[in-house]
Length: 346
Image 1 (spheres, rainbow, N blue to C red):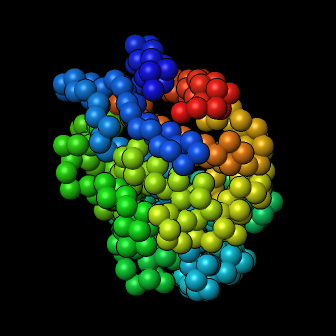
Image 2 (image 1 turned 135 degrees about the horizontal axis):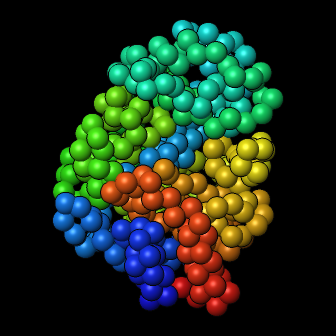
């Protein structure tokens, strides 16, 4: 896909990103490629389509949302169940699973750095936190809610979140290079050069997830463009992958519904996904969902045009101060739409 490689090369030259791999799914056909560099420091390394990226908050929508929805599909929980029913140490009896999924619990967005020391300390801090507003009165994007959902999943399955994700999602979706705590760190794209931990390569960038031994509900997953294309294909195929049901169509339909309005960002959300046009895709309408991670990767799914876009990059390498991708990502999307939707070919 020369047009996309050319655009990526332009972004690399302008120092927006070190490089990018991608997967474009159109009408059931997938194209995978990439251009640029995996690493800039301490040495320059060319990108490979098999490069593994820290997907940061994409963890929320590729692990937590489908696992919770699978529990609902299987009749083990309900969206309107109180969180306290499964996590009795949680002090609020009015916050539901739905509230955590839609960021309407009104728990704080984060916790202070002094509390980021261990998994146990983080969970205790979340249990003790006061709500910032009354539940369902507004949307406050919160890592804490998704950490709690990860805890809930572990309790219901009786296994750690990384094991549940592998057994229930990654293996059925043939996402063989997707995991928490990747063992082969050499094929991972590095993220930031940090003051405390040095250059991060194969170790999770997010501080809370790192303190939770790399396994958390809000961040921690590493993946490739190819693997995420399987996940996106499942969504485009109404919950089916290679003839196997992962989720029901009814669940997938919910993901495309604007359930809540995020006033701060001026966009609609479903279960964490952004619904409609935003800073990732240019298409309007309720049949488009997308999401991105702090480190740079993003996914978008357009049901109207039977199109999925996976963009994998490490924009925080070597520093998180580079925020240029927020303005440039829609331009990449626009190039894809110009060449694939309007021309009707891949």
